[in-house]
Image (tube, rainbow over all chains, first blue to last red; front, side, top):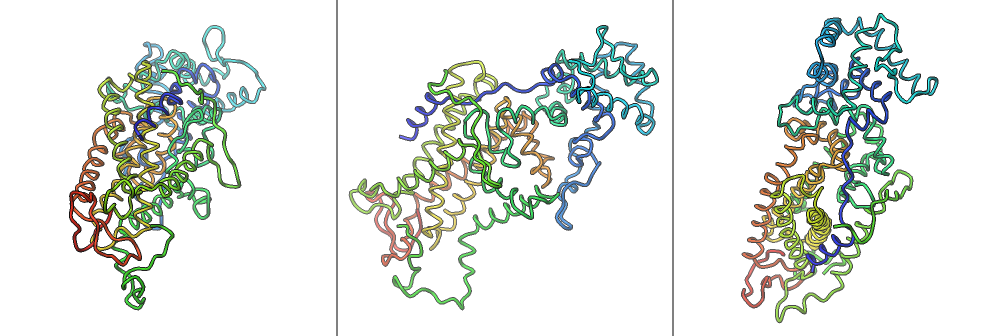
Length: 291
Length: 242
């Protein structure tokens, strides 16, 4: 009967299959937003750059008193956002002239590039705010002529990265950075998440609703409704306002899961001072309205 | 295979103070409660000529969940054998994927009803510890099995759930070996590691059910158990549970 019901539901309702988001699509539809994210990755101020383990040592991650499993697990998937998400994929696709510019840029310490990066960010924010309404920050000749000449190397890097992303080459390079046959989408996904591209689309699909989001699927399909107790904890204090909410919620869920598994053992811990029920032949009474 | 009813439009969200849940998810939870009420109301005990299990309704939920697990394994095997991308481009593949999806939703609903029934009727008493442990652990293993399945879909749902799930896993240090944004790793967990663990636990659970008589009901005078299959197993002393 249940197998038949499954078949009927499959025929009636099918299943969701919204096409994946790509950097190609993002950089074409929001070139300014894409470049702004790249500037943040280069400057080390993106979400991933400041994440901590397992990507980098920028922070220690979440902790509860002395309990810091995120820190203890260490950096298992090292990501230097400037090098891994921007410089290296661009190098893999650059000609000699651009290689030289990239080398010049890479040699300069970050502290000496802050002025250029801040300038780039301000300019791109200006585009986004509509003060200079344009579909693309690229000029007709393909150059990114929005900054003074002193920032030539950064200018050229961004000008080269945009068409690479728009062609799909950046996504391929990020994927292949783990090896030619890699199926690890961590880097492209982190870049899109840093830029808010996934969140933007999820919002259009009615997916995000604070921490309830993990339960949802596109369309009007159910997702993982059995996770509601987990999602619910994020909505209440002290978890809601805690910087360590993920760890605290997991600890509570782990304690509940342990108690759930150990129900028979916990029941045996009944204090002897509590008298054993006398009804039903000295066994447990009927405490609940079940059979 | 296109669906007869188009539910691909963005879902409605029910918002009430901090509560925010999609209508579809609420419907599944309500359907689970309705199914709970239905199985409690149906006279399952009449299906036995003599000596039905102490909780025939949970027994049937467990059997139905087991049937769905077989549906999940067969549909999952078809999806895996044809390659992870097959179902995106094939009508038959989409249909098999749909069967897989709805079987998961029903499987969890039935498992929750079965577990709730066992928990609140105290079926874990009187030597039923191992049976409870295999059932409870099976439920806990089924959760990441389903999660990795959603993440291994290779579509926008997978991308979104992977990004949303990673913070919690990274916070407990699991990101080092359970990277939700690594499709290959999630696919291996979903098609090999976790189903293997789940199959082991379910097999142990079923064998324990078959090997032991059921625990008497709470408040029952007749503590002596009744057989799982009345026609085959004679009543035995001592209790177990079902």
